[in-house]
Image 1 (cartoon, rainbow, N blue to C red):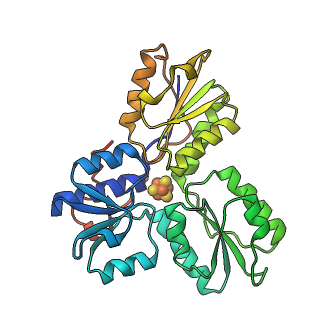
Image 2: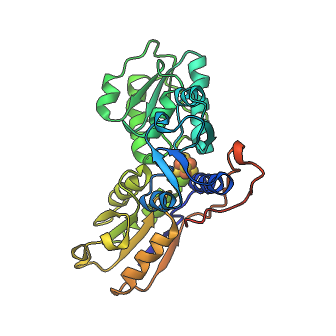
Length: 316
Ligand code: SF4
């Protein structure tokens, strides 16, 4: 059994979960959270049991109540709506998503057309586009590249969602550059360190694996990308599961080497449960495949500073 490292929780997810835990500790339940705080079923269910109420929109939060914005970020319109309804807010947007929001504001301010590579309907993309809805166009597929129109081909920049496949994004950029040779690059990588590190690690082991199991939820972009990257890098099969019990025994027929990794929103306890499950079925010899050691940590959201810096989430 090969076990990818790094895998699981990133600094942005840990910070967002701690933010909700701190809010519960300081203000008591119920704490409202707009959208899933991070895209993981186990994390969401655990926090719900502790008194969190997840809502789709701020309009569902009672006036004057406390609402936490998720790690994926929100548009300025959502902040305004919360203010108009007198909501107290804690913004758990990952600082690496906030960085992309800043880039959108800067390029929109300089009158660029912004081509945002990302997945249609993803919350992060909705929040990022909302910084400058008149200037941002979403580019998801190759077909979108063909359809996109800009006002001035010498004033175009591409930016991206933080949790995409690195290789696919570069493919999309090449296609965009064919149409707009003067397109500007983002000032720094928009795909975050956690997403790219997890892809590098799964690539390093995929070719040796008959099956790669990725622990992660179906609405987790970076987890789904790990399945695709594993297959592209030579794994014979790759599957996404939330829990060990979702593994179908039939997937293991004829399998000698199993690879395991997990998305950036996945507590490692779920990976350990999967290892135990596999160990009971003969895959007890675990070798870790390490491609990076991550030491990144983010300060708590501004509204919670001074309430326990360095704390780690208890849902792990
Ligand atoms: S996956 Fe990347 S952008 Fe998303 S929360 Fe983690 S560090 Fe931040």
